[in-house]
Length: 151
Image 1: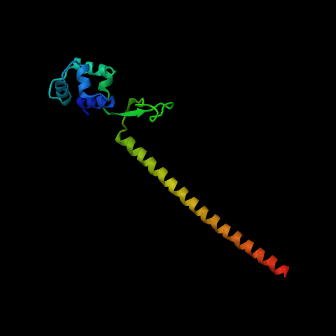
Image 2: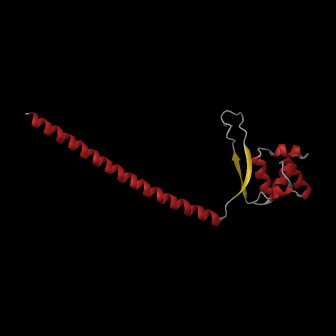
């Protein structure tokens, strides 16, 4: 992800339009749009201004690369009861290929264990049903025995 994509990503995560950004940066919307598309030059001072609009320092803006936004709703808030809900966004590192592979392997292992447990539960349910059938047959036999003894 290049810096222009990072700026667009952060702008969108902060729910800012290009028009709002342009206004905050004392630019026309057209000039801001060109800046974000890379059609006009970007300098460090402009990057610092953009970072300030985002409420972060330049180092933080530049470190957004390789991260993705994660939205969090505080426990004491319900997105339904708020109008609009108060979302907080943070940036967390996206896992690398090795980490993703490790997690996928762990998920596969957990799914295998789950499948084994489900098979055991199924087998136990069959055993329970067999025992219920045996109890019912035994109760019938006892009833028949009592009937035959009563005659």
